[in-house]
Length: 215
Ligand code: GSH
Image 1 (cartoon, rainbow, N blue to C red):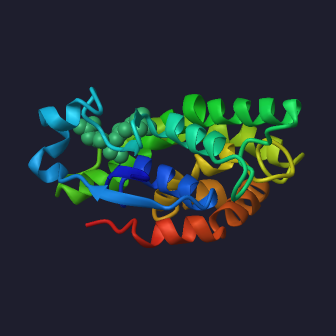
Image 2 (cartoon, rainbow, N blue to C red):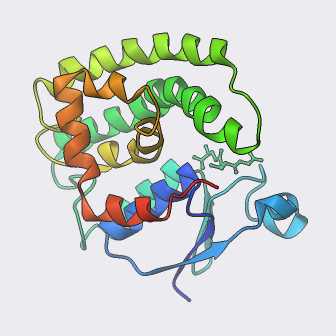
């Protein structure tokens, strides 16, 4: 049966999952979900994802939702192929990967998401962004990025001098941020800028990004 991803290519969380599958050299089928028609809120889909969001991953009889849980699963299940994303076999490195996976989810994502949502997604629906929300989160994101700048002054990637799942999980929202005027938040910090250049030049990212086209 193989791996199926239910989602759409331009969705950040779908893109996160697809990137992990490409890094791990896992074949997959992308099954498009018609969100315009509310397919993600229909009973058949809700049976797979009770919160009615994308993406979902199906691997034989296993059904998963939450993109970060999915990328961890993919990295662990396919640990013997593709890029070593978890550093299994080195307890300290694995623990540091875990720390920075949490930092992305708990610090970076809550700060960057509203900026990208207001400046990239809201205009797609013909509406004007709420600039007060943007400003409040730029202030928050600046503080997060100061921590990243200090960290990345000590190691090339977040968990150490190796690319890992922690770096990968940052990709989709940062990719969209870089299309806005707030790309300067990344570009003005030399270590963060060098990190983003290394992360975004990976073939898996480039392939997924090709299809992250905004309507
Ligand atoms: N924490 C979830 C994950 O990482 O998978 C977030 C999923 C999410 O927000 N998906 C968006 C969605 O389905 C698309 S990127 N939005 C429609 C909705 O919430 O109704």
